[in-house]
Image (cartoon, rainbow, N blue to C red; front, side, top):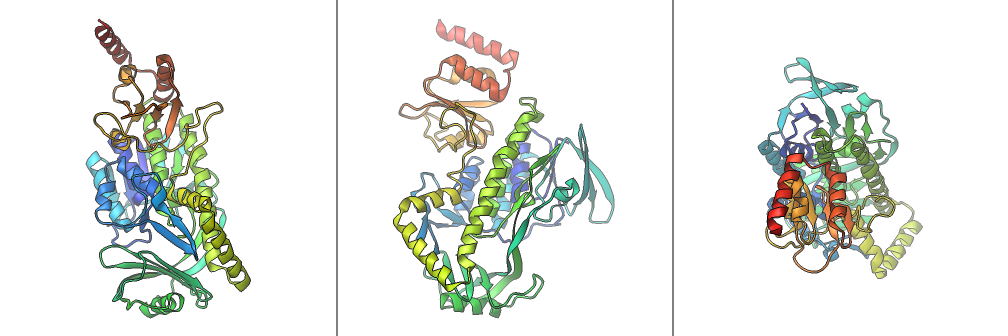
Length: 494
């Protein structure tokens, strides 16, 4: 097989769907025998929704999720997503199992193979491929071989341990309680967050009558395997928010600790790490599942390009170069948010409120926080001398004709070339790039990567400049297609 993905969480499923949709052979092994109806993650940020829109999945989740336009994590300071320039200026509250549902359907339809109840136990690689030892539900074992392997198997990643890679970092908060409950009384805001000397409570609605509670009681630090009761959650909720909202009928109660860790490299040879296998952090900011999904979006098209002979091995190195700094940033941001919440000193807490008030007046601070947490502001390093848009997220441009939007054009899973009269130039690369004209206004000519970032841009480029960019990113066009394009050009000039 071409690619073996270990782990069928959101990260592994999005990657599998991308690979299978591009004609790449992919198998996913997952130790769970069935999909879980419970999960920790519950929010999709704007940039992740754009990635799902580029796969025609966002509208399905929008129909069942709850939209939250503002977060208020620290007193008066607010993180206002409604000002973001995107089709999705909000945080969408929807449980992880719903995200997995739509991603699994897409991967299965595209032809990916999913093996449930199959646990990876070790890996070995050589210059030509990777052997993965697996154990089946009945206890039998075998070895699967693939050209590349991606470990998307969570914080306790077997793939990462088999590579011998360290996972440096530290625990930051322990004995955090999770609960899914129903309420008799609705909280005053869609997202309720409260913190004081007793601890903190975060409440989010799933939109179907259930609420997720994340709570931490400073005075009761229990081990992860200590039982959690509804009364435990009710008590800290009442002491932090002033009300328990008549919570009842808990369908899930759990306790966990939160670490901040990141692997020193996301690639070793033919093996890659993505999602929680590569980075973990506190739930503050709700960025965990989102970061993993964007890891997958970055890696999928690069593996496809190399496997199909359109790019060299150095393109795969860019996965680590681009995504590891993002993972580092997410760890730092979530740490800052969590530290501000759990700080014990009354003096520091008072200073925190003052800083929050100042930041509230400096709207630019809040705008920057919204762009960073939502992922809209994430950009990748561009080569020296490149156009300023290179490496940046491409907005959802309006296009002339059909498809009508850039992110609809990206549903082909290919590059998109946006510019005036570029169709003839792009014709030799048919099937590898979609050519489109902007709906209105004079813009730079843009070559958009399959993950929605600008690969190349130029103001009023000559046709040869565009061809050079296409050749650099897509490889030489097949001779047959070049000949056909030449004949079409001759006919159109008569």
